[in-house]
Amino acid sequence: MRALALAVVLAASEAAAVNFCGNTQHVDTCGRPVNIYPCCPNGSNCTWWAWEMTCRNWHIGLVNWGNANTWASHARVDPRFVLTGPQAGTIATSTLGNYGHVAWVIGTTGGTVTVTEQNCCSSCSRNVRTITYGTGKFNSGFVQRRGAQCACSPGQVQRQACGSCGSQTRGCDGCNWGGWGACGGADPGGGSVSCDNGGKGVCLDARQRCVGGNLSCESLVKASAEVCDGLDNDCNDLVDDGHPPLGAQRPPFAATLLDASYPRTMKLGEKATMWADFRNDGTQTWTRDNLWLSAFDDTRLSAPSWPAFNVAAVLEGPVAPGEVARFSFDVLASFDTTGELNETFTLKQPDGPAVACPQGEVTAVIRVLHDDATPVTEEETAPVPEETDQRYVFRERGCAVMPGLPLAALLVLVLRRRGRQGGDDAGR
Image (cartoon, rainbow, N blue to C red):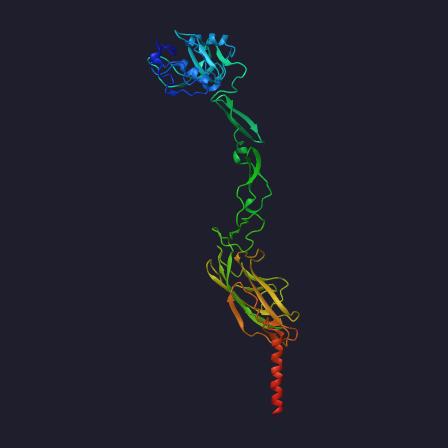
């Protein structure tokens, strides 16, 4: 039968390498630069390891307590120690066999103890090992430090609840407990419990989450910059607002204004032609039944040729995605208004929303003149967005002048004209 856990005290010549045993180096945390126990010929010794554990964990350098089968009796008369039942952070002792056995306890469960140990025998391994025994193996008790006992032993872990759904753990740092770890926990229902956090748009769908140990209602999709995709990406309860650029997923109806033409000036009662080119950037083909160019209900440019008082133009034929549609229509300067008009025409679905993006509208800036005003006759065609033509400012009497031209310069022009006329009269 193999003899386990021999703690034979070797001769001094054999104890020369006591600072290294069981492939383990002595760590001095007890003021003893060397481990006082020898290492057996197989390169392992249970008393070397038990002494090492008291040095590392209790910071006590024991005197020579002899073979393992005498450790309990030495502890019983040493005022620093008591014999207790099995518990982590104690020295398990046994008097069984020729020399007994000692080991360091790292855990207990029911009628078993789990220990770390070395063994002294010709067929034993030289390494430290972890093994579980029945508590009856250690018949002479468990040595515990009296009074200032270690709060814990290496390998021990504590867990406590935190927050509304979390827990946290801490481990034993040699002889004392380390700090508590972060508080966290599993999501309720495995993350499938719906909740309402007041989110809008893509942020509406939310689930209960355990965040930092506390319950939180988190949107499955976070707010992002708005793009033209038929969704409320920035979660402000408005879809495709602010003329955003096209997204990876295009909406059924999307349009980009490419070009437009309209008169800069009109006389009261005058009729003119306006047109705008839009590219179909959506996924739906446009038809005269699903899209038209609309005006606001209070428009002041409505003409009798319009399909309806607030519908400026409809399509003549289908316009597939990627194709360009031209909307051409009459505008009539009403007799009840003069001055500058800013009229916006918007692509709109019948009984549906306007085409919001990337740019589904065109704004015409037209100055309506009195009958005696001198109009600007040129029709301007320019890249969009359109800007107001500031070359002419119309005054109450209908005169047109360059903006910023000094009044003195105007007087000079008038006086020269009158001088010319006077010279002509004098020569007649």
